[in-house]
Length: 113
Image 1 (spheres, one colour):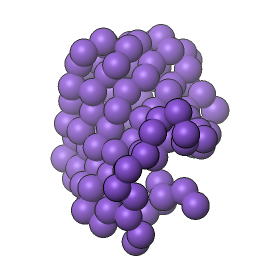
Image 2 (cartoon, one colour; image 1 turned 180 degrees about the horizontal axis):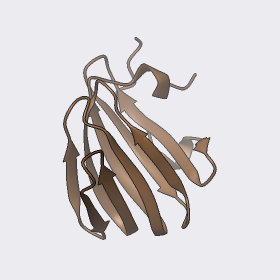
Image 3 (cartoon, one colour; image 1 turned 180 degrees about the vertical axis):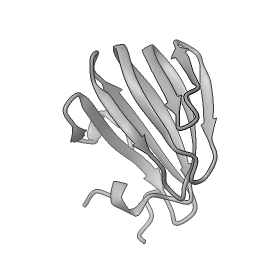
């Protein structure tokens, strides 16, 4: 995988992953990746998992994360969260939300040419 060591959020075009879910991949190498996400109220992301551990920080908005065991938590402005590698999780967006997520290792499917 190539690496991108410097970038600016204003220079990256968003990629729509699903209706109401946009991603901007900012910087990455093989082991680390930093992305910005914008989610629109009402958007949902089904239960899923991936190799990469996922750490996030909510800049603004309100989103609910749920897990396979039925538990959930609300993340709002200033909240941080972590999902270990392969832990199933999903999302319900209660307000338009912006957050930053860090993945390790990088997610090759999030590298945009």
